[in-house]
Image 1: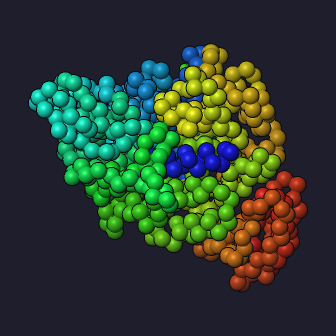
Image 2 (image 1 turned 135 degrees about the horizontal axis):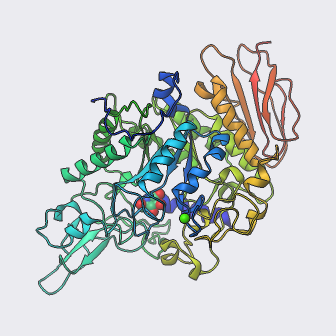
Image 3 (image 1 turned 135 degrees about the vertical axis):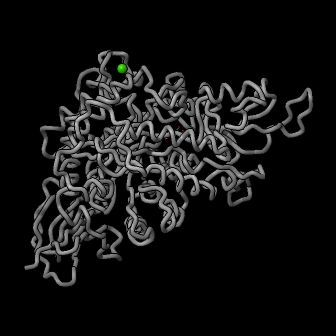
Length: 597
Ligand code: NOJ
Ligand code: CA
């Protein structure tokens, strides 16, 4: 049941779809990294980074209003340090009417009072820096809030200086007295027409997401300049980069031609969770001009190197794309880099434990993106969590261990979502009147929204799970009584301990930190096995059983006679002595070093 829902959601979201600066660093910030931190390490930190996504509203409330905040995150940095992360991706905490919980921004250069102040933000950056944790901001460039001063100006009259900052169009067949029909059949990813009539301007504006999120006009050079200034503002405050939200949606086809309506095998129009026809999005998504903008914004970002905050500034992309060829393009052509880390949704949303599919998709990012670095992930604040999409209800803990091994022991940067390390469950609302995420109201009951994966972080077994002394903005699920940090931290067999262990291997074993991935035993349909090897060092091996039955694998690695040293294994499993007979329990994992003799 949950799997079907997960696939629906993945499909929904798939449509979502210099000068070296020395000025501007905040006084009083300590150097982020100790003297002697290697410059190659600072340059390449992101290539093997462990990135932890925090939805600030749901992580830790410090003032009892039931909403998580920046001071709450700062108070939990030691937990994150112990977990072993390199960076926090902070979803939007700018001033916002909160229609889309922060993805509707009304001021790009401030912090929403619900989350704190700019001083709190600076303190978070400084305290994280002391622990070698970097902060990545989330930047929404496709749209603003309808309460942003740019849009308020834009809608105030057709001749306002901001009138061409957004996508205004006449209605079809409009007359002096009739607004006419929307300009075409384009749909919002959050349901219904993407065009909203505005009585003051007597035109429609385009919004790919909520009505309160009008799309900016990226054909206007002033929009580019405004975002370069915003990027500079935050980089000078010490952020290590950005995740660019909905970046494939920046441009639309200027012809404004209708999108094609997709049909099922019987020729009937497909209908989505909102009751609208399913459209091909070739006129509204992933248009080539996105690459031109990315080259410009990357060149701008690359000019930043601040003495107070060393390290490469990194651009992560929210890049839901149809295939690896499109993903490869997001890194940019030779000499014109774009993203450092466009997210790989190919691996993330396989949505079933299919060994051949995992092998093929992981091989793709090893062989089809040039020398670039993959960004692997399984979930985020828009999708049901790992357990909801891959669990079988019986072996969920082992399945989550297995997927964590894939995530952290494959080559590249790895991103995960707060609470995944505990095995937090997706807990959707059961009544429409409890839904907070507006898509869950529009789409009820087919689409219950994203509240289920945004429930408060589970710190302990108390009534509000240690998240807040007030009433949490979303309810704490009953499963928090057992699934929480306090219960899992002392237990060496917990999922939290497993996450700490795989992250430690990723960060400390050179073959995991830098080695290429080579798939082994490539005909096996039950067990995924791969080897990592850094130049000059011993190879390491990972074998993951993707089935509920015990399996034995026999592997061979040319030049090695097969002796193994265990680095990590599923609790209770035996140590194999040889590559020739690795026994794995249901969804079992073995990680070992391959010895010369
Ligand atoms: C993607 C974000 O991750 C999602 O939460 C948001 O609703 C849309 N973009 C619109 O900004
Ligand atoms: Ca609060």
